[in-house]
Image (cartoon, rainbow, N blue to C red; front, side):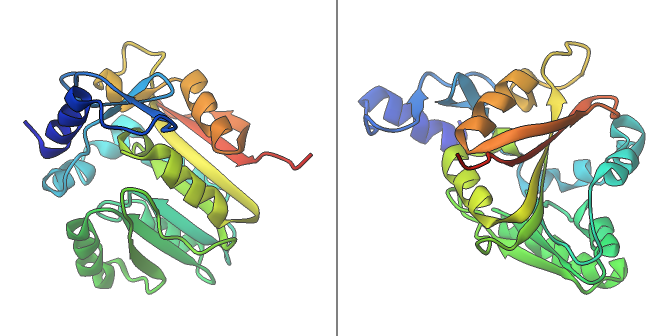
Length: 234
């Protein structure tokens, strides 16, 4: 049993969680950790040993990552946060599009950040900054981030409420959050259910974080591109 699953199972058995917590617990399913947020069981995290899957040759064809990069509303001087940056698959091409700005490559796994550091010279960019996050914080500067990109990462956050609070706090006045997830409504998408999200579920969770949906871009064959901004003040 994975450590996260074991710990959650122990909490479930003991009933040891705060009454005001946004989370509930259940017996973990095959691909989940047994922790539930707004009706959704949180999935296992893909570890650094799966780094080769992120860089697989078939990824461009399967996911049309080229189209995703084209869809990103980036300006040359933007500060961009790549949350769950992994191997830097998106960090490096985004860095080339913000030559006067920077990309904060954020990951909770030091091993992933080491991979990014090792790849940086060959990528030919000097404006990617690795950032070590925690389970509860993306460690981003307040009010400075223009674009936050989360590609197939949000559904794995063990503390989504806390992490999204940090992300929203990091947004600049014109900041946007771009959430990319495999389409949970589409049963033909060959991804395990807990690693997909519907627009309705994403809406529920992003609204709770203080974000409003601005646009859904479905140019990708398997994923939604959901663009959010802060909820306007009353």
